[in-house]
Image (cartoon, rainbow, N blue to C red):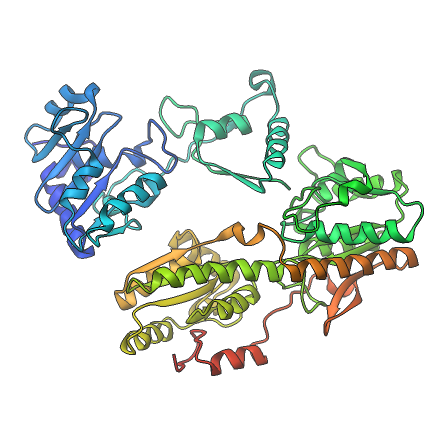
Length: 589
């Protein structure tokens, strides 16, 4: 009898755990389930929460992969562990597979042979790298077998599983690290710019510990912190397409109309204004950037709700911005931004600074303008994502959910969903009824349409959730612990209909790439109008679009307001008339 440490785990033998796992596999229609030794970061050593293979097999070595089918359980180990595994697997039905030995198949080879025609392989996709997943998918494709990688079945049978580590993290002093985290980030961003990279994702815990000079105790004997890092080449607020085109529109207009003009570029938006990080720009810097994504100046977020709090170096942010403005004797400060940036711009305007703004957001939720630059480019990308889902959806009887950006508004989901031919659109302005959504899916199935595509805004909520207070909803989300809205909605649909659900989250891809032709024209027109206001010394306005004409609106009328989708608008009525469901009421899908 073989047991492992830990509460109820001591009460079950390895074989009892295997049978319990097989019960869960049978419920999901799985023929095989793979359990690697891994965490979410492919760390060589893992914390107690991730010792799933050890829990299941009783083998305590630091490396090994278990595979369980309905008829047998196998454990692959390398030469370091042949003796240890032989001892620890005694008395269990687990078969040791000696990696590298003649006649012993690889894990992938074994699965290719053992998963039956039209069968199913399962694993927790968070602990299996993409290359392995793609390889297995290719191997099983000829058998028309599928892969389910969204279920952590070990978690369902491991009742007293250790929680994720909550050990404190701390900063390593510069004298030990050699460089500050800020210096390392600056160097990394410089390399990113050379490679034309807008975003760099780090998942390796060693790399993260080095880059940020942080240490922790989340893995025994490894001073790392369970974490992810996204480094962006960071213009104010989040980036989007056509930022460069907008800056170019202002600059080229000023250079064309003035014999003498000096333009200062502040690095990383308001942060550069606070820290006096800027340079005098040359005309050549605005050449060749019309079709370039991202921003040549970088951008950063400086939440308005924390604008009066000291920065990380104890500086008064507002006072520093005003001081920099006056020190350079600026005639005007041009801000390209969304809702948060406009609140700060309005504050600075009321402090006596000459401010002009331009509407920038892929969410298209900025009050006072019919459209913001960046929106149409994001719509094109999001619609293309849905187009790509269509090509694979036709081959599978599944529900596909594409989660698009939009915490408070559904403009992007509405336009991209219609353009991409989604069947159901879920947006924050129209709380959904899960039963209505489920019925719309069933109706499509009965009509011979074997798949359903749902475009869901990241801020989509149900009718029940809409009735909750902000604090109640926050508590509910924390308790649910889903990565995002699409996964929550997907779980609800699976429970309601029993249909397989697949989730696609394009995320920041929606902000990236080249601006579309429409946004290049729009940004240029807005930039030219902004330059015109500078020459007229007419400050305190945002350039905007009204009925396809470039106009202006006071910044004070824009700040603090959000442009929501009008639920009684023509586009909503026409979408419903055409058979699209918003999940709020039955429709004719």
